[in-house]
Image 1 (cartoon, helix red, strand yellow):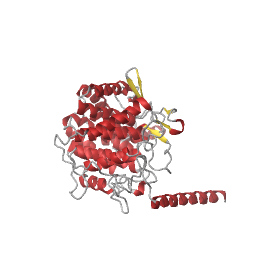
Image 2 (cartoon, one colour; image 1 turned 45 degrees about the vertical axis):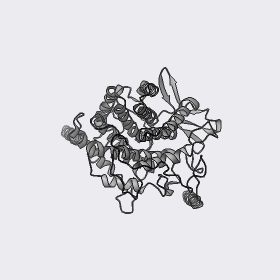
Image 3 (spheres, one colour; image 1 turned 90 degrees about the horizontal axis):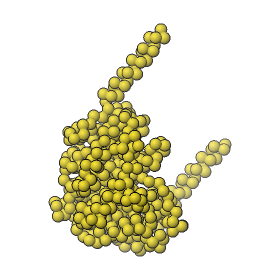
Image 4 (cartoon, helix red, strand yellow; image 1 turned 180 degrees about the vertical axis):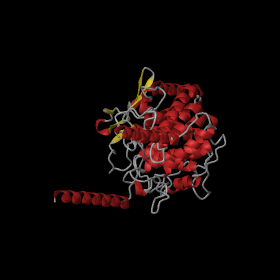
Length: 458
């Protein structure tokens, strides 16, 4: 009897394994049809988290606990999927989201995000509309700002906050004074501004953007020390507080900081053909190995938190933008195409193997070197797998367009700057109604916490 039970249990386990293997994501790198079929399944999983089609949901937002900034990251990836695979399934949804979330003054500072929006949050929506600009995504009608104008509005409002009062320059992490992190200057906010300026310079040919990119970059590398050169390889740290004039660095190293900076230098090299920027790309390539799995040197991992299992919801999405930046660099800098495609393709195969979990059998995990699903799931895991898998097609498609190579988006170099938004060169003016709204929300939160405390005591 005991033998029969063991046989039954073993048979059930084998059957379960067979079902999991049968439903796991199938991917053949180098085969566009296979890549696009796999990415379509991942996008379907992404849509499970989307709030904009739910009753009472918000267009352009994903369900809690995912913040507004990650929606911008996700839509950038979905635009690339539209471009790489000519997949129009979600074209209208993407279009509506980009326009719905642009805010009252077309600069991606919607008033309902004043409790959470930082410079980096705004920038990730800026990245999304830059993807729309450079990929010739469906243009808005003439009575709406074009994708390029929206990108320029993000740049203009971010650059207006450049703060020379502390640390010799740099953006603070937060836009609004009441948000935690307003006294912190971090790499991601400044890397995003540098990256956006570099891309706008390349797209428009306007040297003003290039000058901004150079100023921000010099601050990161020479003034703040957030980017440090060791043996011709860059190390990129997280940031520092203004209390000590940015002298005490937070030494966390994240993929997205590194990738956004590297891709920015790639855009500048592609545009200027200047050896200076070629050398900068070299230094990032020399330092990239710290983000590759120790057991498989070509598979990307989030070194700061992945092995400890302590990645937050935000951090679990960082490999998404990192993957996108590797692909952009591979396309823009031919010298490194082979090296970067080795990383992209090995990581894509690992990501596909991780997409073998959940009730659908194709839910993606975080560990691309695990050989299967590791039990992790969420929006971050889905968009990261999407970006790395579709990035295997980057060499088959056109480079990001410019207005000289077929780009069709309409711009406005003064977009986003309105008297109601910018009071000086350092910070956004917050209207009284926004302050009142923040105070009301804070009061409600405190009241709920107090009530819970009383209930627990009683």
